[in-house]
Length: 276
Image (tube, rainbow, N blue to C red):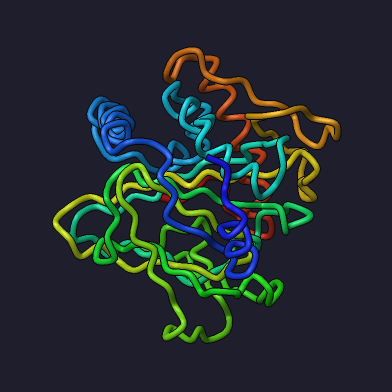
């Protein structure tokens, strides 16, 4: 499942590549079932702190971030020593106003250097264009870091509701529809966003943020999960995999990891927990 030379060249040029089939639609349905079983027991949709760093809370999510087909594709871009920095669910209910504004992931993350930071966006449901599929601006990763403004908009799925402080020419946008079990890969500085879901079906995606062990966090002493290879840098404290869903050890590890990440992502604000 390593990427072809043409796929790697396309990623380097455009800042993204899709679609990549990483597991069957049936297996995607299994992971969706695991998520929705939790939501049923919790009495509502996953949200707030629980939708972030989910691989520390649930055994099935810890399995998903170690999926060999995902890691093989990521290894093609960043090498064999791979860290999962975080995971984030991006879920849009049917006919819902939730959106993601045009932004660059690099704005508040504090990761350096940025060129080897890649997001695998894995579809656990079909994500047609009308469902609010992601949209990318090809080649925009080469523009460097662009100024953003925080909006904390009610329906924006981003942590700070951040959006570019410059106008985006939407005529350049490429829609990124995916089928359940497929993923896209994109660069940390790629300009991207998504519209609301106008379909009758829920759209479920898990964003997995991968870095090589050489990347460091410049804002805080952070934690992360080594998923392949070895670490020769000691830039992160290593997170334990959960042995049971939401058990006390998993909840404690998650609290610790989220506190570090909140300190980095909300630097300069009075926020103390993740939004939505």
